[in-house]
Amino acid sequence: MGIQGWTYVMVGLTFGVYITIAWLSRVKDTKGFYVAGGGVPPLANGMATAADWMSAASFISMAGIISFQGYTGAVYLMGWTGGYVLLALLLAPYLRKFGKFTVPDFVGDRYYSNIARLVALICAIFVSLTYVAGQMRGVGIVFSRFLEVDVNTGVVIGMVIVFIYAGLGGMKGITWTQVAQYCVLIVAFLIPAVAISVKITGVAIPQIGFGSTIISGPDAGKYLLDTLNQIGTDLGFREYTSAFGPGNRSMLDVFAMTMSLMVGTAGLPHVIIRFYTVPSVRAARLSAGYALLFIAILYTTAPAVASFARYNMVNTINEKTYAEAPTWFNNWETTGLIAWLDKNNDGIIQYRAGAAFVGKPSFTGALGTHGERSISNAPSSSTNELYVDRDIMVLANPEIAGLPAWVIALVAAGGLAAALSTASGLMLVIASSISHDLYYRLINRNASEKSRLAVGRVMIGVAVCVAGYFGINPPGFVAQVVALAFGLGASSFFPILVLGIFWKRATREGAIAGMVAGIGFTMLYIIQTKFLGVGWWFMDISPEGIGFIGMLLNFAMIIGVSLVTPAPPKEIQELVDNVRFPRGAGMAVDH
Image (cartoon, rainbow, N blue to C red; front, side):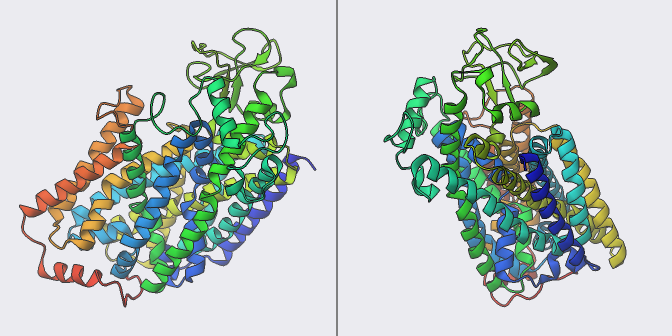
């Protein structure tokens, strides 16, 4: 059976499991819809949190970025891992004790203000939509290669699947589906990593293998990372393991980006809401520990996968004639995610530093002299002739290494599991923000359970459509789109959550001013630098790192405004004192 046949089998089986779970877990009340009834066991919640956490960006794109950027690309790995630790230690148990359904719920009650609730609601929707756009793009990429449809059709297929199981089962269905998705994605990530590590280095543990010597071929006996450094400098790139300096991000930008990813993680509403689904504060702490273990398995493997992919890709296509190009190259060229422009008309693929042409490939529909897909883009001044979309590296890695078709299909199923698990969690945040925080808490306090459920399901449908649009028209690579969401999360939620728990003097006026200033500044900078062609005007910090500055601004505004406005009511200050001792919490409450 070929790759496509195996893909139909793997994807069909896993989708069948997801929809069956959603049907068996379908809910009839808002408590099941918002927080899965509040009785999810810690181990299951740990697996669901890990799946929620490890999105298409983690599974598909993170290793791709490290593969192309080397050491500097590991900023994503450091930021996301550190952020999860921050969330587990600093926020999760306290928010669990507060016992509300959503983050805007916490903000509205802690800051005794429906305006604060509304601002938080808008921030939650904006952050979630930005994040989910990256997931839907990841779904489209997987479908486009393995089911041989274009990326846009793949996005639409993903939209339908997410709507079915998120709309049917709410948080309860999503939780148990995410448990299954974690099992699929981690197996799919580890099997090819182990196989390729054995093939290149003879070591079965990838984390050790990528620091070992190569066992065969012209580089036999050399350390893999030393070989990648040599390959990089020979082709005009910087050394693979170099950190800062010419051609790399500045140290300040790397620091800002790491911090932005870290605190953005801790402020992401779709992860925070997972800690409302367990029965107690102790269970919340326990599930956070399980999730960290499950996340570490994939995150410690990703740098190895990146190194193996880099080594195999360069060796199999650079300085080869187009006629000799391996099958995987032609397969991915068909999707439009690889393109070749024969600048010197020698029929040989030359991979060098720099862009091959201006912009992303625009195919004419005709074939070139050597049979390649012709493009209409203007050539760049560099000698590089090859365009490779970073997001394909993990998916293409088993094909590049010549692994069996079933392994390649399993990776496709894993990529879909990672993207869909996070997308469904984000959809629920958007739906609950509108149906609970806006419709029920601000518009119609007498709404029935049935009408609130109906509004929630309709909102999931609307969110799916909007996310699908941004998945078809993304503003960047998957991980970069996701990084923007983390920046917006950092600049909006993190300060009000931390100060809301640990500083009882924080007032509603301060919270509103902080959120508006933080996310407003960050959005302005991102729009200017990503879409209007303006340079990185603030201390040469990239749009992916500017969320850290937005967060500092948010903190400063909350503290400054709180000190010049009346202190919170006595009952709010007593509530903060009580929350700071995270023991004895009950179930999440509707009120």
